[in-house]
Image (cartoon, rainbow, N blue to C red):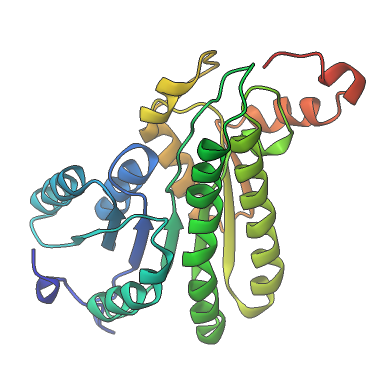
Length: 260
């Protein structure tokens, strides 16, 4: 797939251009399919070469044109971000939307503490987002337009006993996205935080107790609607908003005794 064959946006035929980091599976892949059907030109990033290229072939065959270009990239390879971002922006002729969907989960078990796993989750879920979204925020701030979407989690709303490192990575991401929103909203840039509950993806295989799982496609539909409405923070499915409101207000003396 050649970058030169990507259809460009023109005044007579405008096209939205999006970059999705973490696009080879799960919500990232579901969003890529949905946005391609909505007419977007896409740069799709992931570390799994085969899955990423297969997804682009699928999307382009359905579209009847080259609208999705794969870029193999590990979200923890921070030093490559500036050059790769410039390359993608040039190839697509600009960027309108950037979505950070990369994420990993490594439950340590209730009796264990594993710094290496915690470090990997922080590096991927939080530092990878900052490495990408800092330069994107600067670019969108200068343009006074654009939309940033970050896939956080309900796990970041409170420190639960099962996986402190994952909770911390997602809490940090939610806080970071809020800070970006507060900076960029006055510049005409929308920053959307997505807080999914449990979604049927590869990551769910690591979770012992599964509650109310939804498909990646359902999550992508909710995210797409939130993007269209320029929302700030959205839970998917919707009822997690009220569940987490209750959980956030459970007194600590009670909450610390819970096992979820």
